[in-house]
Image (cartoon, rainbow, N blue to C red):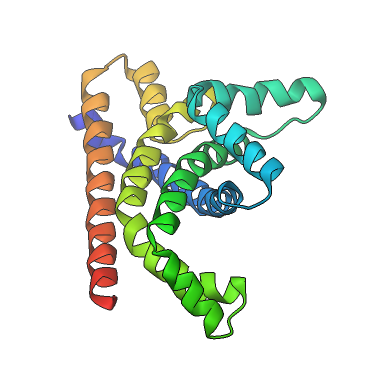
Length: 214
């Protein structure tokens, strides 16, 4: 394991990219998921159909295929993206589909009487969602969102296939240099585990805080 320690700085740089990709993809994924969730419960039928089709396609195809489509496929139509940009886009689209179902279920879990009461108090639909529905739905959604966060952290390893130097790619480069597999794979496995554990601790604290707030 001395090789891992000697190259710790290089691996930590890869871990930083892993966290960066995870956070950026989750931020945009949350935005996409919220929009799609609202589209899924919209009263406009074509909007519901489009949203349902998007979720079905993304959840029904491998994330690696989606990464290749964004990076290689779009280039066939003149849209050439950098590897890091393609990673952000592909993972955001992927996680957005999964989060949309989480958000939709959380919103639908709020009793309909809450919306009716908001209308009776003179609120607009947006005000009712912002002040009444979303805060209650957030408490329901936070736990499954945490699982999605951790899953996304591990799925970032797939972007190594398009030459993004995240944690797995960093290990692969070191393996090619030293011709040693086990130490580097054990090392990055431990780093993934630590990052996942820290995510779990933070999300548990947020979930606990939300449960006290309501």
